[in-house]
Image (tube, rainbow, N blue to C red; front, side):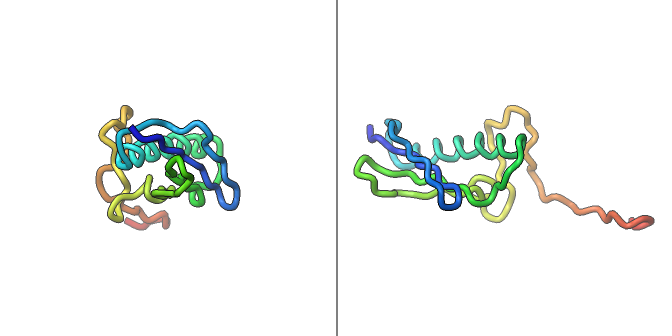
Length: 107
C-alpha cells in the first residue's frame, strides 16, 4: 500500500493533508479524490460559494504531486454531466438537458 496525500487548492489557498491515506494505487487515490470532491461540491451547493476553482492535488510521501482533480473533472466526463453508479438519490442527470424557452407564448 502507498500513502497518498490529498491537498485541497481553492484559488491561491492550499489546505495540506498531513495524515494521508494508504491506498493500493494511484487509480484508487483518484477515486477517493473524486468522492471527496463530490462531497465538497455538494456542501458548496447547499451553503453557497463558487464551484469552479477547487482542485484536489494527489501527492506521494515525498510531496510530489502525481495528479490533480478539478471541480470540472468531478462534474463532467467527456463533455457530459457525469453520472455516478453510487448515486443513492438516483437524481444525477443521465441525458442531455433540453432548454425550454422562457419567453411568454413561446413553444
